[in-house]
Image 1 (cartoon, each protein chain N blue to C red):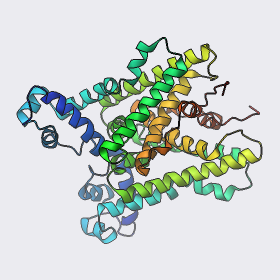
Image 2 (cartoon, helix red, strand yellow):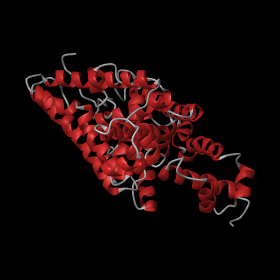
Image 3 (cartoon, rainbow over the protein chains, first blue to last red):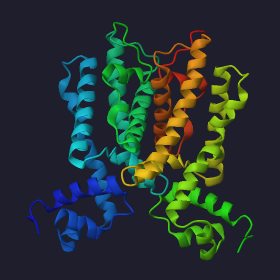
Image 4 (cartoon, rainbow over the protein chains, first blue to last red):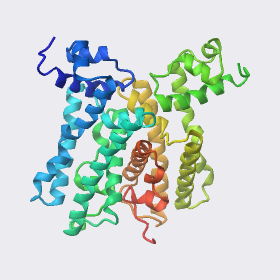
Length: 201
Length: 201
């Protein structure tokens, strides 16, 4: 057994990987415990059920990427530069993840949305919260970029939703092709995906 | 037991629904047989395994929607009108499906891509074939629309890939929200999703 002190953290990390790679239903508590090097008693000390663990994994996904939250502390940066940072971080995350796994693994939240979105209303609501926060963060950036004349866009809210949807959709393609080239090459192409024009380019 | 003569067809239909709603791993042969009103002996008469059934379900998804295949017979229509037809069919399909199921169920192929794309190379290849055919059909239409001056678009192939990715991504959002309003309202908005401009609008 690993150290008790970080057993909870190890369970969260193992659950993130296993749920993403194999789905929620296909993974049992025993498998989670083995992967995290934790015994079953400890599991139920920390989580009342596999589903409670899942809800925490979803909650933590926001903080884990830290991408959108980080923007709030970078207010002095121009919106377009913040968007570039986000894009570079996203790209770096998926390339690093491919190195670790030996293949493209895509996004945990899309997987969960498709597996459980139609069956578990609470999980669906938590996932929707996540997508909404992501969309709001993009929309705020696009609105700021519009106000400062850095971009031209009809409806920032709608464009933001499209950006989020496109990225999740492209990660599905990347997964079946085991190839990250379908991701946009830079933040300009990312914006074009949503019909956002940068008049100075 | 239902009639033997269409037992194979019933298995394909039940598998489509069950794999979409519950995933591939979570659904067993017994459950498929019950839903299709077919006995196990008949199942193995038609399919050597659940996975062989899956491969046929994927193959049939192309013909089932019939959307893209239909375009080939509509050559006299302007590209933009063909795109409108596709959009209307897609919309009608998901609204009708919501009526039947009582909720938004999304796309079988996205579900399978996320569940199996990283683990079963043959399934991944079949799914990629599907996405590629869909992308090619869109790209051909966009190229024709570009040639006839109906749209302005930088790279039709890339825009087509974005359209396919956006639609799959938006269907994920529609599923977790149980709300089809996230889908584009019409073919003009669909095109805008991929940065395609219709200069006359």
